[in-house]
Image 1 (cartoon, rainbow, N blue to C red):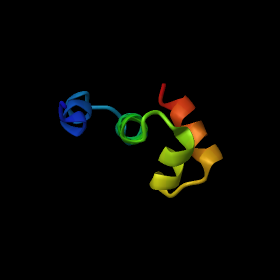
Image 2: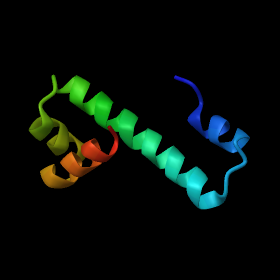
Image 3: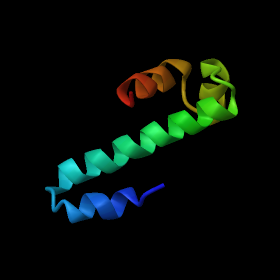
Image 4: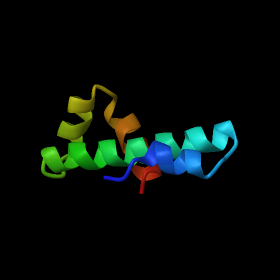
Amino acid sequence: PPDVVSAVLAERLPFTEARHKVVAEFERRYVEDLLARHNGNVTHAARASGVAHRYFQLVRARSR
């Protein structure tokens, strides 16, 4: 995968906007990877992530 941090830095964004973009991309990839490893099972993916099921769902919805 492309280096997201370098791409965001190249955009010369303000700190908060740059941080938001990097965190959003991390969350998207993290959720996608966990769901793939758990065959799309949200409950198992949430348990593996160590966060509450509801919070995992919120992160998942935000990252779509």
